[in-house]
Image 1 (tube, rainbow, N blue to C red):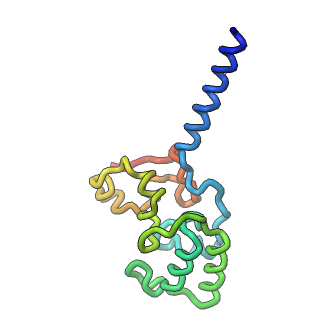
Image 2: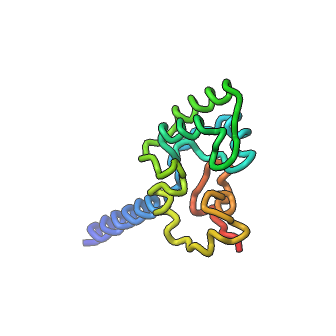
Image 3: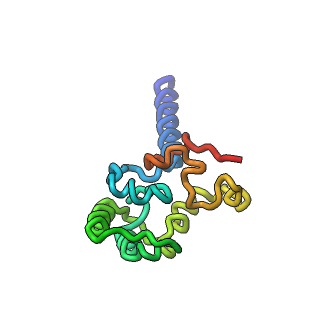
Length: 153
């Protein structure tokens, strides 16, 4: 009987640990090191989003439309554009493309942030859901682990 209780306790603990890990969705699960040029160019305006956050077709559309990148001209020289397009495509995720290729409209993003109210997004210290670094203290490293979230006032 004692062995049965011990095994039951161990199985329950393993199940709880697995569930807790699964709920702590550290998007992306496995990170590709950020390309230095990608980091330099993209992080000049926003977090250099890990390529796994969008599928290849989304990255291809975004790179193709850099002159009209969400209302900003983010044009790059042709060689850099080609290099980054190849890197983003090679390291892209396998999720379905979100509406308008916006990470913040993807199913997993909406699910992960469903407890964040509209008033929180509108705080001057946050401004919008696309400002990952406002709350994710290690977003610049591609680390979105819940342990490193600090929601500013």
